[in-house]
Length: 271
Image (cartoon, rainbow, N blue to C red; front, side, top):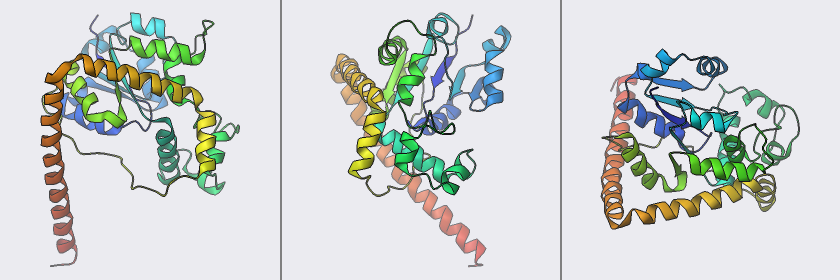
């Protein structure tokens, strides 16, 4: 059976930027996006004929049984991204609190849920929020006597590839090789303006409730270092060239966006 690429998109790990890159690579009708209950249901019932049509599956997908996943059509070219757990939790909280279209927007604002509440709460609405999401996303639901962290580490190593958000350019070059991507120049998407630093108390609570994600991230970062070092000097040269090109691209894109905004203002105000 044909095996499409499979992007296990953990929220707030630069997935939106990646999805824009993928949209330029794959025809729209060959991408299966899985971000809603209906889309998850479709993926569970997908036929072999439909799998053959798909080149990429992407989305917030919970894998129930990773052993079955890796032995099936979707597990062969599966990949994900991990992010510093503290930064990921803070970003998720700020995003959900300020994006009106998400289902927690009203609840977080009407109940005046603080960052500490968001992370530590055992209320049904928040019980799985801000607590070891990366480890839970990679451990599956099938218990085998090992800890969640052990299973997450094992499954991370079984993925075809994983990236690190804080080392996005290196990760993107690995994806380029894996997926035969031609143009990977990018603008950052879904990036919020920097907010004030979190307090020591908030930091302590986030670390307490995300201890397994912190250990997983340390493990992943060390493994990522090894894999990059194994690629040698040629990869370092390729990375330096790409960084230079993409910095130029982002400057030009920023200027064009500013010009378009100015032109729109002139049109609106009749200038």
